[in-house]
Every structure is written in structure tokens, then in C-alpha cells.
Image (tube, rainbow, N blue to C red):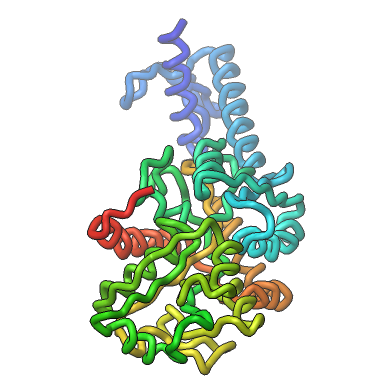
Length: 372
């Protein structure tokens, strides 16, 4: 029976090819012709000579066609239920705010609810693993950033591989880090800070949102590139760091501009420099570190990834949707209000950005023996 089924399948395929070529159904005679009796030359499949066999073959071909059409219809109907957009941090943070900035547009364009779901813990690894293990059907995505989606894998063992377990979709925003100085710092600008930090008896420090964070790595990057020995003091998150800066517990800190703006607005901190390749439009008086140390950049990305194995047509549809959302004036304004740069990308561009981050931070982490 198994051999018969296999033979029938081969014959059906050949029959379909014959129909496309205008040759008719193998084994069924045209009007006015004698039924063929010879075997097929390719594959050893005997021609279907009886009316019963011909009918079975025709039915089989119809069934195969119906299955193909059903598969195509299934792809075309995505999405047919709500989509979960996992944010691997608590509600209210920068990542959460940026995800919610694009969420209404995504829901409207896709015609289905896109639900932002916060799954914090382990520096973003818990929510990231959830998506890595999710079915690759386009209904569970991650709104990630540089930390859990790339850098954390360099700092400790994580239960996922950022290159193998995910398919990049698009970036949504870029956020360069900024260096702020508290009122405790004597230097009034970045050049004065460098001069002070290079003194033999200098005992300056910088705060970060935690060991292994982008703010920590950026501080060590500056130490290496400028030949400094500014002491690292880690805090447990942006809130604690902001309090420390405004209280004068630390002299400097590497922060995202959204947090930095609140510190500066308090009158108890000031911007010294930004880690973007050039100055930012919204604070043109603050220099880029690259003006003093060519090649110095530290920019976090925020964007969407899907589980590995997600169909290419779904990835393309998601990418088109995100690109359109980021281009909408109201979405751009919402992102800019978070002191971030609206920036969509192709999947390949996001993949390259992740590779570049791993190449930039990996050697620095190993040289400084930074572990979580």
C-alpha cells in the first residue's frame, strides 16, 4: 500500500507538469486516440491506463491543488488574532515608552490589536527568552534593545542565541548616550572634564544604571580611548542613578537623554557631551565626544525582532508596517519627545547593527573582565 501511494504521488506530480505543458493527463487518451500503454521514461511510473485509475489521479491532483491553495490562504490571512509585543522591562521605562509610541499605528495598519506586554527580569533576559521559545507564527514579537538582544550575551550565559533564535525586523529608534555632570563636578564642559580627569591625582567617578549596562560600557570605553581612570559606581536603574546625580553623590554619569533631560531640568546637573557621531539637533550646544576622540560612539537601538523560523512574508509585512509607522508625523513626534531619534531599517540593517555591537563591546568586556 505504501509503495502504491508513493507511485501514485509521483504520477500525480508528473500529471500536473503535463497539464501545465498542455500535454493532458498522462494515461488518459485524447478524443480519437488509443489509450497509451507504454511506461513513463522518467521515474518508472506506469501510465494510468484504466478509467478508474485516471479518475483517482485526477481527484488526487485536485486534492493537492486544494491543499496548496489552503496554505496560501493561511499566509494571506495573517494576522487573524492579537499580536503580543513583549517588552522585557517594567512599564514606564524608555523601552516601554517607545514600544507604546508605535503600538497604535501597528494595530491600525495590521487590523488587529497589538498588545504591549511587559515581562521584566534578569536584565531583560526573561522576556527575551520567552520570545525566543515562542512559536514562529508572527503572533509573539519582542520590542528589544541593545542590552538584552545583544550585549547581555557577552556578559553572562543566557538561554538564547541572539543570532540563531531571532529574525531582525526593524529598528524603531536610536538613542545615543549622554554624559552629564553633577554640581559636585568642578569642570563646566567636556574639555575641562578631560583636563581634570587626566591630572595625576584625579579621583573622579561616573555612575551607571548597573554593571554591564550600556552606560557602564560607555564609561569604560571613554576611559580606554582617552586614557582615563574614572571610577565606576553602579546603581540599580535609571531612577536611583538620577537621584544620585542630583544629590551630588557622583560627579558624572552616562545616561539616556530622556533621563538626562530630567536631571538637567532640575538645575542640579548639566550636559557635558553626547556619544552620537555628531551633535544632536535638539541640543546643538552640547558637543559630541567624537569631536575630541574620533571614533567614539555609543548608541543604543530599539526595535522589533521575531522568533527564528518566522515566515519571510510575515517578516516583510511587519517591516513595511513598522517603516510606515515610524514615518508618521505623530509617531515621529512621540519618539522625539522621548529624546530619541526615529529610525526604521531593513531586517538586514538591524542584523548588521547587532553584529557591529557584538564586535564593538565584546573585546572591551573581555579586557575589563566585566561579568554579571
